[in-house]
Length: 423
Image (cartoon, rainbow, N blue to C red):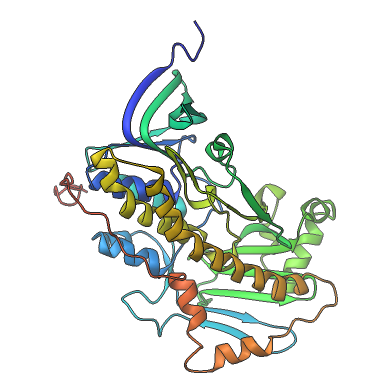
């Protein structure tokens, strides 16, 4: 008997492959609307360093509409209300969130594993939600030109999930996207990022800084006990940087950010420096009958402005809004999936284009040796005129369109631990 012949089968309304921000949020929203959901996550836990952890006001608004924002903000986090960039040729870019409408005027920095644990814990209060860890999807199940589910492997062997809809939320290296053979548009980013940590002093109160210099870019984020450092390098130069040696790397960080000169010795090993290969792409078509891609599986984002996690969550909100009723009524058609793409494709393309303009107009010149970076005239006007200066902040905070939860809560959730009087 072959592995496929012995595969154990499960049937649900919707199967999500990948429990990142998009998969976890869609699982929660569909489960509360009475849809049976299975989320497959190939890892044993959510503990991975330097993943997207910038929770913007758009996501905080979504959590608030779900009645979860106050509880979420009890998690350890830091808040940033202003992003500043000092340019060596003169000028300063400042994006201030204080003037935005709404309740939340800051970006919350929360480790992604805490965010995912929080969302999946809330989702597990609904009887239709099931999360399986260490469950690695291997291929889609196709019958008569339509996707009918997915096969996955765990310690107990091969399994099949049969579902009305399989959602690929398995990131930029998506197995399901490859299996669905959907057309992809790729663009070339001029940079990669080396992530590391350095200790923070109590008197260092800035929330986020970005420094630009000839041949160098460094981003610094206040994470409470430490600074999270993004050292931006030209595309494909990771091996060259490492070959130059750890001491040269420490000296470069110290020269670019003199305030850190007394602590770069904390970088003791290259294992402390993680490479993020920056890429930006999008699917021309996000769906096939029985299959939908969302989040990074549909559109990998540059790390510029940290919007990727929030766009992925907006995908999930839009998908739940459109799909909960057809899934409940078992009337799902490709037209429903096309409606999800129609809602999300234009906002995604606009943000990707803006990221590209920043990369090409600011980052690429800064990464060229002896190239002075100044603030373009159009950008200076945009950031100085009262009627326009808040446009960048709005785009960072909310994206192109401010999302709202449109899927209902049709099933009661089990009481949380705090509601049961537990700690």
